[in-house]
Each structure stands twice: as structure tokens, then as C-alpha cells.
Length: 379
Image (cartoon, rainbow, N blue to C red; front, side, top):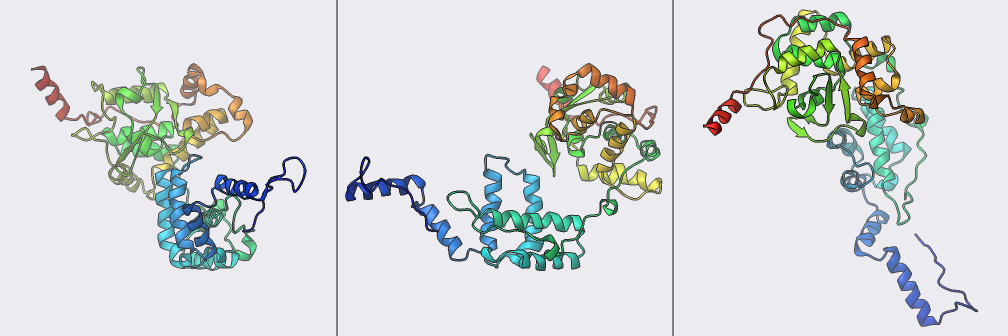
């Protein structure tokens, strides 16, 4: 790329001698940073035909380390999966400058033939576009700007009515709890009555995330793939979720005499596995009810539907579910800061399902190792 910069007037005030002009020119180049070894190597690589694979390797690191909206580990893992399976095998060795509508058209055709859903195809192509757009010059301008043509690419149209979005009815949730007991019953009731994500519920700790009256849960961390993460999916995920009195009473009885540790834990005090909860706590009741298998996210759809049926304020629904504001007006609303009002709405709305905790086996999984340590220390 050729560029020019003003050094000084050719005559009159500000005019410099030849040696002064050369020194000034060197200073301008040094300040721009274009003569650094790192930049020259990067520019040389791009101009000489850097491959899509090489740019992807740089991009995947950049999106995690950048200060402006770094990408969460879960998102990176998802991107790595689609890159390794679909994108790099088809576009990895293609020069980055050649990845345009025609190359994308070929990739889309292969993904459609491979049986990927329209939504998945659209999501994966966004990764391709982001990698191409990440190649910029020293001014931050794209080296290979593209006007993507979805008509030419033959991008499949996403029909939301055909997307697989399983959800539960009130009768199904009641049936699930009727065929459950103990921690399994409590876990499903909590998801159905709050709309929490499964990882958020598993990450709850008794002494840190439950109010003294058991009416409010403080969502501050989550468990993902057997790891405790002290951050949430989005900034909006950090919230306080209020429970109706019936669910709060059930939760208090479940906690019992425990004062610390994970709400859902094994005998060693470690948090439970989401996979095991799904296979042992949710799928068996669904089979008994004659319902198709579904994931825990179906509880979030049930809760959202129930809240809307009962005319819950939309901004409060988004707050409880951990969704970001959609309009400027949403930011003006301060309903989320009014605890008493939130509790009032939670009590009015209720659960939308029924349950019974009379079963004596409905008790928490209390870790056995911790009391022994406490007695030994006291002695």
C-alpha cells in the first residue's frame, strides 16, 4: 500500500532543509509503527498470499485477548469445532484474498449436503466473514473488504417455526417433579420456577448465592464442562432472581441444616455433573411421561412462556432470564432495583406447576467429609 504524509511546506515559513526533511520523514514512519519487524512480517505475509488457515490462527487468539468485548471460552470452543470440522478442511489452504462469495458458496453447498440446519450454516458462515474482515492495515481498514451476496451464495433461510426448540407445558413439568425425588426434584423445580441456565443452578453456593429468607438467588458464577467459572455467559447474566414463597419453602427444606458448600453436591462436597443430572434426573421422567427427550433449556422456555402469560413486565422477564436490554427505554427502567416489587411479582405469578415434597426421600445430598473435619478440628 502506497501512502504519503506532509512533511513541510516547499517554501516559506516551516520550510526544512533536505537533511531536516529526511529526519522528519523517518520520525513520521517510526511513529506510525509500519517499520517494526512485527508489522513488516505481517504485511509481507498478507501481501504474499497468507492463507485462510494462517489468518484464522491469528484471529482466534486475537478475539480472546482483545480488550473490547473478548470472546468467552465457550464461544471459542464452538468456533474451533466448526473450523476444524467444516471451514478449514474446505478453505484452510485458500489464499485469504481469494475467500469471497464464490468460495463461500462452495462451503455453504457442502454444509447443506452434510445435513447441517439452516441456522447452523448461517452461524458458521459468520466465522468465515469475521476471519476475512480481521485482516486490516495500519489504519484499521480492511485489506479485503467484501460485499457478501447471500442470494449468490444461496444461503439457506432460517425458518424459526422449523427450529428445534423443545419446551415443557405445566402438565409436563408437574409430571417430571412427580416422578422425581431428592436433589433431582429440587433441581428441576428450581429451573422451572426461575428459568436459570443449568450451569448457573449447579454453580450456586449456599452461603454466597442464597438470601437469608430463601426468596432471592444471586447469580454470580456458573459451571461449564466440569469447571467452575467465576463469570457468566454475558454481562446481563449477573443478576438476582426472585422465587415465589412456595419454591422458597421447598428450597429451605432442601438445604436443611447446611450453611455452606454447593447447593447441588455429591458426598465429597463437589458440584454435580450436568450430564448426569440430565441423564438421571430429567430423561427418565420424560420417558415415563411418554415425552421426547429434551435438554434443561426447555425449562427456560417454559418459564418465559408462563411469565408472559401472567403479564410480567418485559424488562423484568429479561432481567430474571439474564437477557440484555433491547431498547434505550429498557435502560431507563429501574424495576430490577426494586426488590420488594420483584418479590411481589414473583409471588403473584407463581410457578405454573405443582409439586409435593412429602416424600421422605426428598432430602439434600449432604457431604459426609465436611462434618468429620469440623469435629476433628474442634477436638
